[in-house]
Length: 245
Image 1 (cartoon, rainbow, N blue to C red):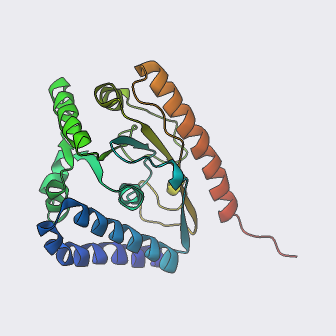
Image 2: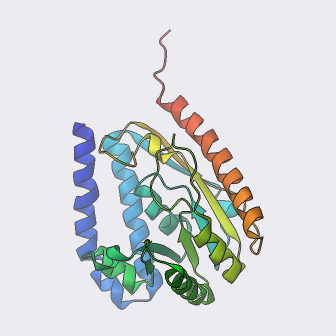
């Protein structure tokens, strides 16, 4: 727990430092700010390794396609939010509306054109999200969405919400990039105890855009769950104590 609390100081301390230091980037083209956020993501990875004994690995970068595209990832923890800033050029998150009012975080989100939505909204909210995503797609950006909607424990059964990603798929007709992970083994969805081990993100081969809703969801869930289960087993093996001679 001591290492966990030290890492939280690292995480939020650097967030405050970067939040102030990055303010001048808001005067430059959007991509400069996005790359700066990606640098903060790398700082998080350094802290995980030095303080918590958690290594992070990103596989399958060759499967990243230039925007416009849809990035559909498993969501276990806060780190998932920063990985797209490391592996894609111009990510655009779909995020909770209340985050837009958060100091620093909200400023950077809105200045870089993230899409803020009311998660408890209705059909009108969905339509607004799709219209905003269409505009971002014309800018050749990668739209980031977590199909299960919120952070989930790696042992929890899948709970895919089809409405959002299906609407985006139908409207944009762009490649969908699934991203599997086992991050929740080391960084819990809830709680503050970080466990040493290996966090892996694996970018999977893109799914063609324009598939019908049923076909899309079946393939997306199969691809993500199969790969994530494999990564979870690999992560558990890395955490297992080594037997002596």
